[in-house]
Length: 292
Ligand code: CAA
Image 1 (cartoon, protein in one colour):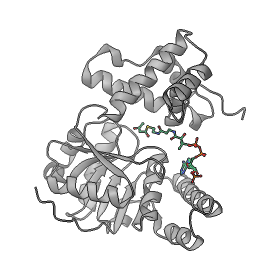
Image 2: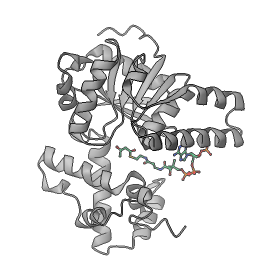
Image 3: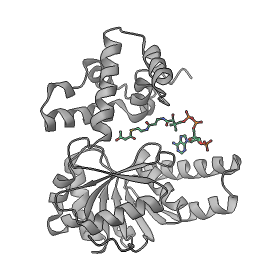
Image 4: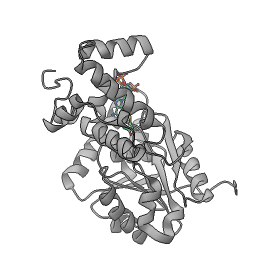
């Protein structure tokens, strides 16, 4: 394996301006990397920009960032509707909705748009990297999983997942970029849910079973796990934070791909999703945020 220092990334294109995409763009910009935030939805881009400015302003208020550095970081982010406007980027990270067909379509466009040296990364939380890479044929060697965690500016990890065809050079460059963005890259193999969600989601699912069976009240389940296991958030609060639909979809990927009944989503989780109670983003999930 060639482990000579990879060329530093100057410009990154982040496809998707949702929670994860906007966090990735901000983290890149704060690390001195120019970022294109790409999203067809003008409303989503506005929301991402508001999040960027608010987060930077808060860091300045707290004395953690100089105003000039905050201004420079904000200036590094360009908000664009199409990949074509971001085509000069030498790195692309897809952070779109967790749907394999949508992601494959995006990957085809990424391979056709960005230069041949650009890595084509995905922030998928559970979909097979090898499957996504199959959409881009001979470009599969530059496809890799670069899995960030929410909130991206705070969480230390990038889970790095090689697909079957991912080259060593792509992997080395992903490790180098993760470090340049202030993160700790840790490798995991291309199995459903990788490591993070293979372990986290069944734990969350089990918390729903405990709640459904009345083992304890939801707030007490969370309190027990916070105080007893030192979790920053209890598993039910964390599920609301991640999105109950996301938790449900990841469990379904684990269930389908690993073929074990133990991964089937808890009926209580399924019912809340069916009712549109998706957590923080809908104002109500396990807990009711409208009251606060
Ligand atoms: N963006 C940027 N910064 C944020 C933020 C956000 N969305 N949310 C919180 N912060 C910052 C705050 O500004 C604060 O910064 P300072 O220390 O500089 O003051 C710091 O984070 C702590 O925030 P708070 O004091 O408001 O709250 P807290 O101490 O309760 O921490 C938390 C909030 C960091 C979210 C913490 O509760 C936590 O770590 N929770 C667990 C999060 C987790 O497990 N994430 C992984 C989810 S799984 C996933 O993402 C992958 C997947 O595939 C599903």
